[in-house]
Image (cartoon, rainbow, N blue to C red):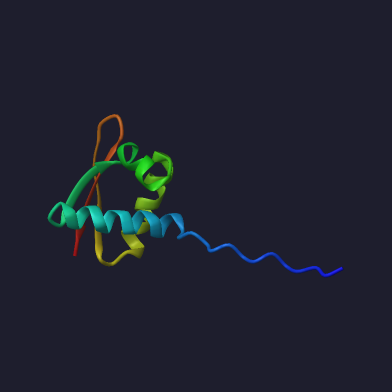
Length: 84
């Protein structure tokens, strides 16, 4: 009996990379600057608004081409993202 290891599935991009790519695309479409609340893009990127909030803080440090700013808080955080 021959046992073969299952073929590894192609890994999907990390959550952070998926969010960064989404923000780059949408920011470029909007002329280089984008304001949003995590709850409004959660379905688009397949993340919860809580995950988006945590990842935005990481992206502020790890994505040199994105300027990330916590803009305001009214019922949910509004984020400002600009391409540098």
